[in-house]
Image (cartoon, rainbow, N blue to C red; front, side):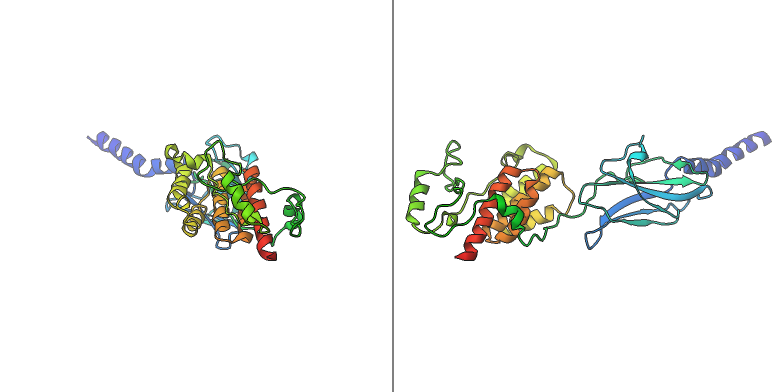
Amino acid sequence: MKEIKTFFCTIFYMLFFILPLIAQSTRPIVSSIATSVSDDNTEIIVSWTIPENAIFTDIDYVRIYRQDKEFSEEQDFSNAQLIGTVNPLTTSIDDPVPDNKNYWYAIIAQKKDGTLFDILVPSVNTTVLPVKLHNTVPNIEFQQEEIVKDLPKKTPKNDMRETPLPRLHILPLQTKEEAGTISPQALDAAQKLENQSILEATPTPFIFDKEQQGQNTTGDDYSLFYIIDSTFQNKDWSLAQKELTQFLQVARPDEVTARANFYIGECLYFQNNYKEAVNYFLNSEKIYKPISRKWLEKTINKFNYNKTN
């Protein structure tokens, strides 16, 4: 009987004293990693919590890493950017990232013997979702030396332009085959303008194929489709601009972000805010250059026309 009591006491001791210590040595020293963007949109704030039963007897520092792809369980930290080495009791760090790319973060411990305690557990000590600085509208105050130099120059009335205006898809009732050409009705309307510029004609809003066929998409593509279908298609430019701006407050894939910027540029164009529209077309130009350059030309020509007439 005595031996049985001793056996159970030993098991009890292992369950409540030894096993927690073993578990502590096989899991990350921090938990609940989280990221956010600073109020001034210049830094990524990385924060975490320290478990109540955390043991620091052999921990010297906590190291925080950043990279532009998700961390893996077999992570090679030589390819990641070390952004800080802090005291084990620290629970946050500010990272002044150099750009607005998507970034992932990981936190590991450095032991007193110099070795790394580099166990990675998603959402515990490594982020699962990326974070980036919010998209900002650059204050180009019209970088026209760079933008306008490649665009047709405005000439006095009755003079020929150096480069003809692009063909406009003016009437929404044109067939797909006629898209991109000027219909007979549009040409007739343009002739009646006499000395007025064709810039006064309102172009047809452009919608990417992704959003035209968005019913079959998922994730961020579907979210963007829903905004375009419910507001942009109805030409509710103010509401569409508001919802697209809110949509971009969360990190999105680069192509989705570029299309959303393009649509905001169109919303601003149709609200006659040409100067700000240019900034958004510049943002979308990085991925969708031909169509963005086309609308940049429309917008800057419209801005210059209104400024001098």
